[in-house]
Amino acid sequence: MGVPTLTCHCRVCSSKDPRDNRMRPSVLLMHGEQTAVIDTTPDFRLQALRVGLERLDAILFTHAHADHILGFDDIRPFNLRQRSALPVYASLETITTLKHTFSYVFDGAPAISTIPQVTLHPVDGPFEVIGTRIVPIPARHGDIGVLGFRFGSAAYLTDFSVLPEASKPLLAGLDDLVLDALRDVPHPMHQTVEQALELVRELQPRRAWFTHIAHELPHSETNARLIAAGFPNVALAYDGLHFEVHV
Image 1: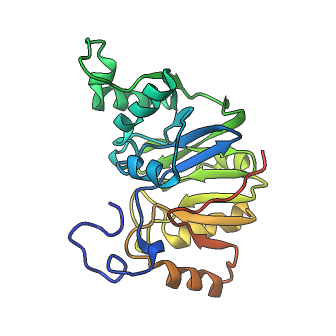
Image 2: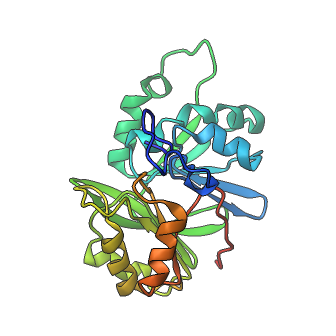
């Protein structure tokens, strides 16, 4: 729901620490002059303005829940500036939901105003965008399938509760792993902090960043707790976090 969460006045939603101010989770990949975004959240426009995004070359979707797709219409300025459709990479299930949610984009009816221009690419194995090989990582988000993505020495896995055994070898030898850790209280569709730490122990990335963080987790206090628990290489991600990835 984002932090601050509407109508909430808890200590995290009221925090003065800017790292406790969290838009919906997304990632911008930059390689040379090219860029790709993972998920177009309801905050996509503000996120793009914040980083001064002038060009977009591809969109990758993890899944089709509202907090990951509802900024889709805001890709139109990139269509207009670049005079081209944007390639979209997603599972067939996600593509089906996109077509339903944004029917005006895909129904073939004449448009009297601008609409997003995209080409759809169902993901059924590794693919290449912005000169980078992308490896999809299948996972389960409650009762639906979702995709994480590996790019070189980093991987991004938001919104999942179970990582199948077959997916774990795809995450070997990582420098940076960004993964779901919603809160401490169990949730049927997300990992808890402890479950995420168990996965960090198993996969052994050099660094791990927790994302899709609910307002139960204060940034500074949680990071201190992770260090005290013996995880100095694990921290909460925050809006504006950036790091280099070897590809």
